[in-house]
Length: 163
Image 1 (cartoon, helix red, strand yellow):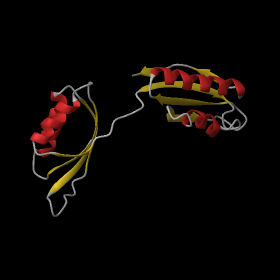
Image 2 (tube, helix red, strand yellow; image 1 turned 135 degrees about the horizontal axis):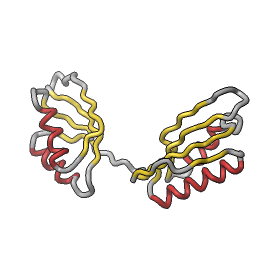
Image 3 (cartoon, helix red, strand yellow; image 1 turned 90 degrees about the vertical axis):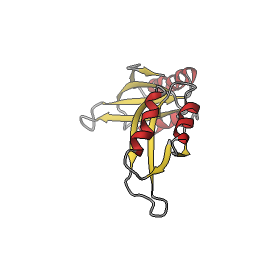
């Protein structure tokens, strides 16, 4: 959510409290204390998780407090899995491997970390994939399994699943 509120003491706390009141969880708050000189307002971005069906109640409470909601975005990729890939990742074109997942339109690589001990030794990569649904996640993992087989890579899965 991107919010605009009065630049006065206690306004940020007042805007955050209703999130927990409706059962939400605050992930991050980006608060820049540079008021708009004409309006005397602050812009605040909040990343949060809300149980299904609670957004309407939250927006009504915030509007009732005089908080202007500038934007609400929803995370469209709700399913997440992390796998490990081991092999000659750079020599087999890691960007191609990632691209095959990202080009689906229903899944993407959201995190990637890599360890490369030496140029001629096998490297390992921790890859996190996000997808629209469980079926889409299975399709994305099937693509990654096929790519791993084609490129002679070892794929270890799943480390976690978050829905």
